[in-house]
Amino acid sequence: MVGIGFVINPGMRVLISVLFASTVWGYRHLQDEIPNGGGVPHPCKANYIWGGVGHLDPHGGGDINPFGLDFKNAGMKWTKFLCEMDSDKDGKTNGEELGDPDCVWTKGNIPTVTIDISHPGVCTPHSAPACQAVNNWIDCRIGDLQCDALSEVGMKNITLRFPETAVPSDETNYLCMFFDLPTDGDYHFVAMEPYIDNVNVMHHMLLYGCENPDAATQDMTKPRSCGMSKSTQCKNLLAGWGIGSSGTCYGKEAAVRIGQIGIRQVVLQIHWNNPELRSDYTDSSGMTLYYTKNHRPNDLKMWEIGLSHSDIPPGEAEFEVEAWCRSDCTSRYLSGPVYITKALNHMHYLGRKERIQQYRDGLLVRDITNDDSYAYDKFVEFSLETPIEFKPGDEIKITCTYRTVGKDRTTFIGGGTTDEMCLGFLFVFPAQNLHGHSCWSVQDIDLCKIQHFSSDFPLVNGCNIKKNANPLNPENVALFKNLKKLCKPFDICTHECKQYVKGILESNKCFQGSIYALYRQISIEISSHFMEIWAAVDSCKTEIELDYCQTQCDSGKNSDRTIGRG
Image (cartoon, rainbow, N blue to C red; front, side, top):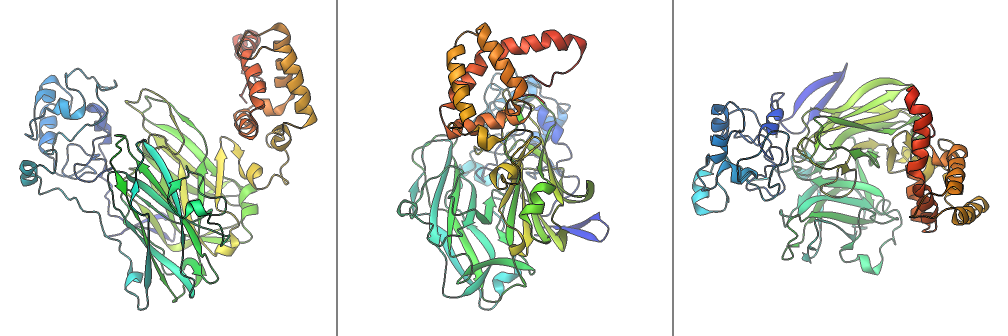
């Protein structure tokens, strides 16, 4: 693959490791002119999306295919005539292929069918003999990893694979398994290539290093369900693979230390996506790791920056969210400057744009990544020819933009394929200057203050979560007792309950602003006894909101006392 250089800051050149032109995806708005236009699957690359439905190039731009020609002749609009045509001559109408079999869909509405759709410009199924004869122009190959290090003298490799394992008949599955790495020497792990066994279910893989060499337990020497939690002893992200990626090459400046004085044990986490809920799938995918005694000048570490929660509403042409790693966090995670050599954006299928930016003293320094044509299966790696210096106290801002036109329900940040994510991955060195593996935020809350540096920040937005989430705290014991006496959880709102709950909302910062939802979530995870608190609060929530609106909404002033608002 060919790299393209472009300037993002004086003296800074970013090399994109995949070839893409500025005109690619230039007409993505046309996806909204046809039913399911943003979700047409590639006919021979499982889990890939054919974004430029009317083009020969799956990413759009350039020559058009038979459906593109018919679409152009129809005035680039979805008409009954276009719907009833069979552009690719495979025996199914364009409407049947795109989920509008009755030709009743109109722009902005949800198609009759949203699953098991196919490409109206490509003969399907691709494996049919008649289709293979006319589809010989379609590239079904996954690109090979381009990495000079693989040809170095003395380069070794090890392949870590799951044994043949049954894929559960659930849509989203996370499985983990421990592996031992070579300990016969001191090595640098310099590159990774994926080994994909079942392309029909593979969504992504992550490889985590274990700080504790004895982290494995007996039940994790085989694949087992692990959710997104991995292992508490294995949080050092070493490598990752997602659809569209041919692997990772760490470069000449830095690599990951493994072996006698480095990582000795890893956990491989695999995410299977099985939307058909099939029970007959198996998989034995994994990764091939390349390692050498020819050490790079520095040890490398990956740093994950992300947003832990957000609600993404349906029907939005562009909906933007932000994730931050602010100065309070970076000044504690970093004991000295680090240098960024690579960066990756990560969202799911609703993602359209993502930008990672560096700030210093409140001022924008540079864009680290800037992808205005993001697509989940169009893998883009931002490799920095001159590493970016990042100092303690500098800040990272990630802006993710989603398109939800055609969706009929809210999408949440989460681990499922149909959920969304807003993440950035930074490859940094020297590894010893970074103390931590991730930096998360939610709204204006820096989660590092709760997860890792609670002694430095006993109050977050005025709330002492550690104290207030302890069910044995005397204040909570009294709170439980009073709510039980005055309120009827899951029932009516009594006068005495409303007055008591209103007092809590006015006096306790944990029940105010953006910290409210986080406190609620954390407290319930710690103890089910907190359900009584939230059930009592909820029993009077509507009445209290109406009281505030009665006194303040009419005057045009926003209340800072409403439940869960700032």
